Image (cartoon, rainbow, N blue to C red; front, side, top):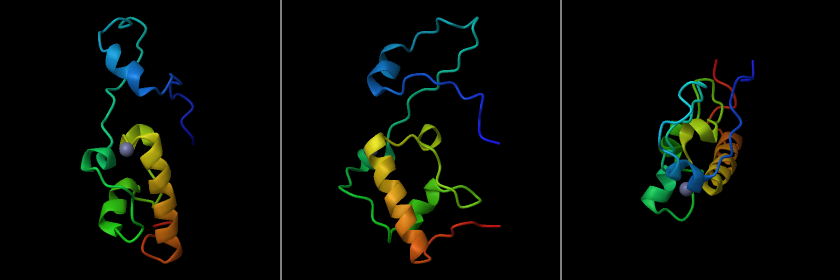
Length: 99
Ligand SMILES: [Zn+2]
């Protein structure tokens, strides 16, 4: 079920901003606009596992953690978020799986 059709372009923030012009329109290459990390925008030093309302936005219906390409988080914050969600699961703030 894993997305096999996902394009594997280089995930570099500096690259995405410079090449915004439509060039490979014929090749059907999808390059979504780089989203800004919500945690960077808020200037929060860390992501707390007790902040369930915030963490809920980054998990799917089934309780899975959203990938970076969807959530738009930066690598640093996605890492912190993953740890926070996992901690929240252990103390039953968030579900491991939701049916
Ligand atoms: Zn960030």
